[in-house]
Length: 338
Image (cartoon, rainbow, N blue to C red; front, side):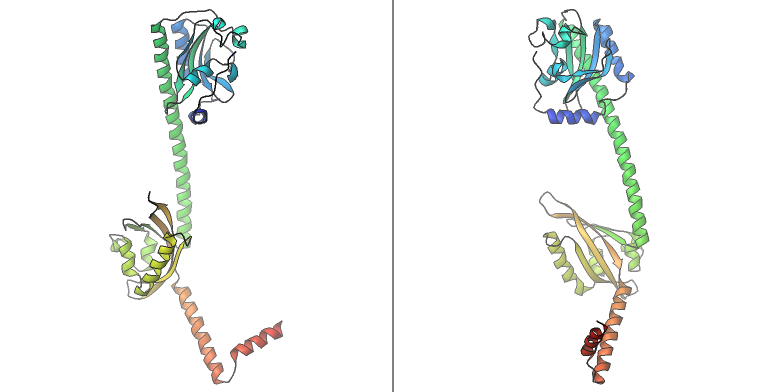
């Protein structure tokens, strides 16, 4: 017995087989019709729609046999898959590749075998549509052509099933993404974060309504949106620092872009904003393409920090006028507490 060799593209072939979702799937009349037609058309004892995986050939559809699978190393279909062409054996008992095969010497006593490889949508052989008889038989060229025609129709059904499975998976992925989007939007709404996206190569930008609310605008008042929209509103003293931080992020020195800057409110005053972002895609040349991030209004925090700084400065002046060394007093207090 001569076991079939493994195809050079065996890994890709097995991946394509798994992707069809057919292996170990329930019986289906969509596939049974091909084996029924083959059995009736050729008057053979057995007809099979086989799928060849790593260690076995599994019968997606079968006529005239109770077995659901056989080991790959004794399968005729493995040879058809390896050679990726029609395998026609008029009398297996007289063929040195199969004469001592247990499927020939024992049940089902194969003599005639004719199998046509069935392919994935990518053209990888997955298994066969085959006919088997326990009597030696000669098939003419028309009969072999008809078997190949029937196999071509079976391949179309494989493609239809694969596309249906892909459609279902896409729908599941879409539903999952929609759930994630809703959760993300809920988080953004509850945190009062403003969001932005910037195409670094074109200058186009997208801002949400919260982004414009922070600076007192309706979003439509800032149309058309671009990076220039932000540059016109940011404090001139903060632009140079922003450019330096951006370049360091683009160069890979900083994992994120982060800047506290002032933006001019519609009413004329300045609003402090913490802007954070990250490049999320690059061009084929490695240049930053798309960047996304958030704005957070930190005006109140900055006002509190300024008030604390002014209060401490006032305390220092009072202490100096009173001849008190505030630094020494603070150190002595800490030593006493220890």
